[in-house]
Length: 110
Image 1: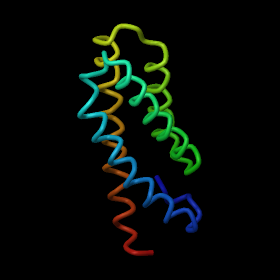
Image 2: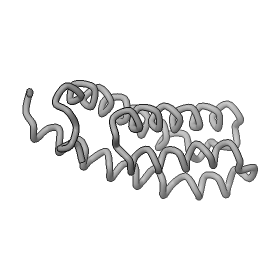
Image 3: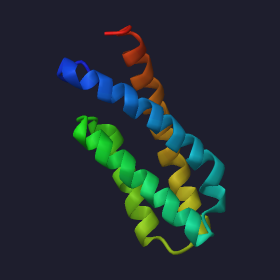
């Protein structure tokens, strides 16, 4: 996933991984509370942040998933349907996170 990135971006990927992990934890703790407008807004902002960072780092799959999550937060009105639609996106993001983290961990301290 990151093998095509310039080496100068690897430190930014490491920072992204830390932030990405925090966002995933927020999703896990709050997706079921999405009926609260403040939570819905915060979840949408987290997806937006992931989308922007992953786009900059050329992580297309993560960008696409987070874009879908962000769009759902903006357009969905039923909180039960929204929560149900976001859960698989969060699960897929978690898989990408694990893969990305393993790849970066494999680089050592370069």
